[in-house]
Length: 194
Image (cartoon, rainbow, N blue to C red; front, side):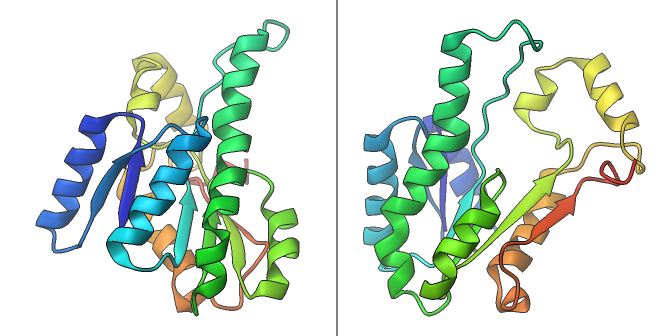
């Protein structure tokens, strides 16, 4: 598997941890707002493994500004990472996905239903993973009070561990979900039901 992050150190650490657990992992630094980085990510991953079967769009940029205070620069950064990057990643990976007998795209972002409709004739499934609050650096950077509020917002009264989001992603990538496309799998501790 290929793991990507803007930070070289994060890529190397995650790949090393996965390799220690017995997986074959490669870390590739990539900024989802950069078409050059996206092309490099797909090329390096495909060259290393010889195939590309699954794409997980998990990059996110929190637009931490209140409504009415958005700046053009902040909106542009969010657009590049949250919309442009995932769309261009799928586009770059599409020839490899079309060649795969088990192609799957997992979006932890929007636009899943339209992508599912467009790619269904090519036997490429597109599903979304809609997580609640997850214990990541981005969430921890909001501070303890904000984290406490996010935990209180869901029925389970806690934030998810990264592993609790990874397992449903594995399900969506596997044959166990072979008849699912255009679906949104909510893994949010009961946030949606509130």
